[in-house]
Length: 308
Image 1 (cartoon, rainbow, N blue to C red):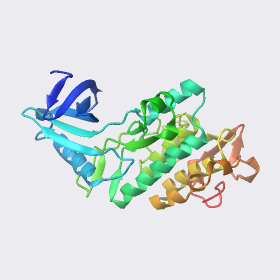
Image 2 (cartoon, rainbow, N blue to C red):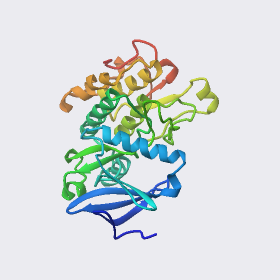
Image 3 (spheres, rainbow, N blue to C red):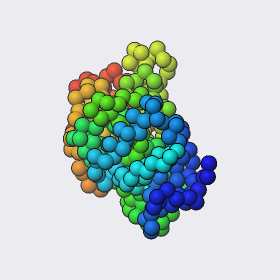
Image 4 (cartoon, helix red, strand yellow):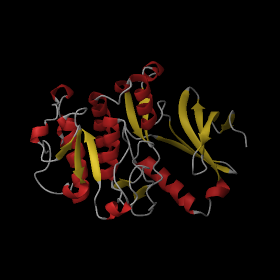
């Protein structure tokens, strides 16, 4: 199979990027002077299989949504032997890749000002998807891309001049037609039920700390709901800690709707107004430089730091 430099209709597949775990080949694709992302797959790999339903479902969803933080659907191409999905191209790579590059370049995770820039967009698009009755199961740092406004700002890792883009709608359930098992974030214990709240918790935690470790002792503790989370209180603000605790508390209580996300102080406040965490105002146990709590206690009232 030719890996690059070929046409399908008006689209020129110039550069082969790689093959994903589902067997789709990804390309840098051009139509005239416009750049797109193209992925193609052998028809015999998807026809008369569950994969064909997944592909159709992804196309239907991309055609229905219109939001600046979701990749845009461009075209679906069919040849004798292959299907090709053409979408908007994101030049910045995944959010995870950008966090890792930033850590290497600056020796520290994103500032909260950068994290706020990303989280505002993320919460807005999650609220949009919920309003559309779309439940996104695979909301991970590997399926969130950055699209920089120019190559110069990309090379400088100038996150403020970029937009996040949600990609990979394979695992979205639309009108209950598709129900694909969640691809777990590696650090989450497998007995935790996945939801958009817990997805957002881990994305925000990673943005604040640059760390995906999730501390628990053993599987028996997970079954008993005995899971300990440690948050470095000296490195992030009271508003950031409050955001994380609220996300987890609402995951436990299953009460939060997506519109509440947009009202959090971390989202609403000007970055310069963020306050340092005060150990004296927390009901949680402080161990060294960490706020340490057990998830079985998170559902209790009056335990939040600066509750929203």
